[in-house]
Amino acid sequence: MRRTSLVSSFLFATACAAAAIAQSSAPAEKEYLYFGMYPDQFCKFDPETDAIVAQVKLKHGVSYGTDLMHDHRHVLTTTGQRAWVEIIDLATMQLVDDHCFDEVGYIVRVDDVREQPGGKRWFVRIDKVEKKPDQFVIADSEWLDYDVEEHKVDKRMKELPKAIRNGARISPDGKRWHVFGKDLTIVDPESLEETGKIELSKPPYAGAGAFSVRGDDFFDGANPDAYRFLYTMRDPVQKNRTLFGVMDLDLKEPKLASYTEWGALPRVGNWIYSRDHRTAVASRWGGMGGGGRGGQDEYRDPQTTLVSFDLTNGKKLKETVVDVRNGLGLAQTSSDAKKLYLTGRGDEIWVYDADHKFVKKLTMPGDLDGRMMRVAPR
Image (cartoon, rainbow, N blue to C red; front, side):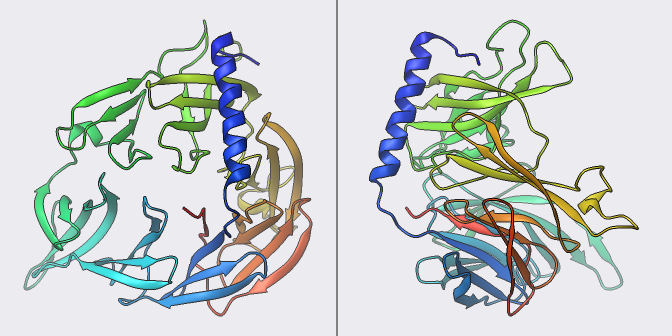
């Protein structure tokens, strides 16, 4: 284990204690899971009863992707053959607005929607195909600077402004751009000028690699003064190995407050955190001996490997190879990570417990789109 300094160690311990106090004193509001279901449903799922408790019919048909908005109270979903963006209120499970990006003479497909700080504007990337009398002509993609309240395009661009072109996300307080590249750059949304920086590209000690942020913020964007992330870096001794750990970023200073190194990065997919961020679950395709995607070969059923970790020290708690139906993978967990949900093609959800033991198979009233969101109440 390495730490930046004694002071940084103290700051890290203090931050951990403060986070624990905040978690214990926070109201125990219930978390739900949300997913799309074909052909045109968006569903709210209770992990206590393992049942759909509410659903809304999309206005313009099949969804092509759903994203949680910065306020954690609404989601955006692309529908209408990718020409419409609908907004769903998660509390009421009602459609509250829709936005059309279709254009006369063109087939328009919305490829990306990015909220801007302040919540009143979006950047929308569209692909266009011009409809000619006897042919279709692929036009150049565009970025639209879109006024959400007025439902109108104010500006068309070939590319996003350079300062926020790659790795930009809205700051936890909703007021600035935070651009994650080699470093964390703080950018003013009006002038697009850099107003601060947290240096991550400088190796913390001789021979080490630079810090690279990995995964989601442990605070789920609810702490305006800090981030906590898993990080990775190159091993200074075994150059083909990647190290990982946890880091705290102070957004007031701004600076790297502290980091703790845990060792070699496990070879697994995306980590899904429990609500208290003390446990994580991940998976990888295949079991012992490989066998390709899902461990499927001529002689055995598909397999996936479930792995649970202790996020207080980075240690592996449990690793289990499980037999699954072809196409299923870890999609989400319950808030306490005591239930693991596997989804994929079809209408089934397979439920496992914290010990990676199969519990039951749920059959939904329609095919799932394979993705499940767990939304922390705000």
